[in-house]
Amino acid sequence: MSELRQLAFFVSVYRTRSFRLAAEQMGQSQSTLTKAIQRLEERLDLRLFNRTTRSVEPTESAHQLLSSAELALKAMDGFEQEATLLSSGQMGAVRVGIIALATETVLAPTLAGLSKAHPSIEVDIVVGSADIYSDLANGLCDLAVGDEVNFTSSPYARSLRRTRLKEENLVVVFRKNHPGARHARSVRDLTHFPWAIPSRYFNENHLFRALRSQVPADSLPRYRLTSLTSCLQLSSTSDAITVAPLSVVQELKRSLNIDHDMFDLTTKIKLALFSNAQNALSPAARAFQEAAIQATRGVRAQK
Image 1 (spheres, rainbow, N blue to C red):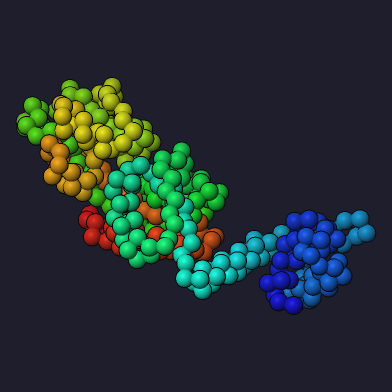
Image 2 (cartoon, rainbow, N blue to C red):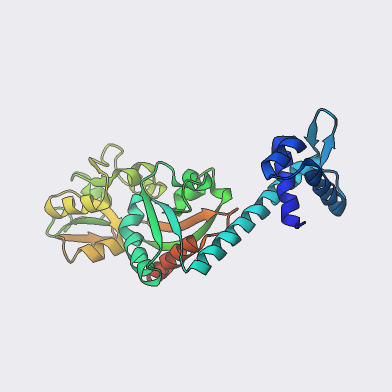
């Protein structure tokens, strides 16, 4: 009998607290399962369960070994699933949780590269979840793309793996020939104009604390919009001012009537891709990660 099979029996007995129920669950006779556990205990030179005629209780050794056993079984399941996909020539599917800002900065080039490299892959993008790190840790998505600063304060940070994607400056954005920007020397000089801020970034993203510290508390923001693109469009047609990643502004300056300035902003946007540290990446998840890294390689060098 394989060692992994013995681990599966061990986990089943641990969870059910019963050799009879575990045998039924595993589709084995009780004597077969009992002998397998005995052989496992002999091989490990550890007692895993205290047995009586009425109960089965895991020992302290069993408690400590459970997590490793489950990880080994998960790894084997992932290996078999990946082998099945590879043999059929398919990549499978990946579900990605992503903050709204990332959809406007890294998602399009990532999907463009992914579709060329793996045209059969299925991708499900979930934008704007209340907590993408919680979703990832609890198995609601395979990957997440979010902000590194928010990630470090997440209670799930220790259970997740981080791959840095993109770091760049945020700039102040306004329409060309804006009446105040020409003579402004700092953000404070623009506080008497309306500001348009993507609401989720401004309220929840720690990167914007530095911006708020430079202006009167009641000055920002006046307009809260759900998307960065909407803020930029508003700034291009009115006196409203916004902030945005430099690469987005440079791209949209070709089509929008906008200009930008660094002023005294010291904030940066830092996007990264996250995965569950306890799980191996599926072929589809690994392909998405490689496409995201490739798509942001040029921008990641910016400091």
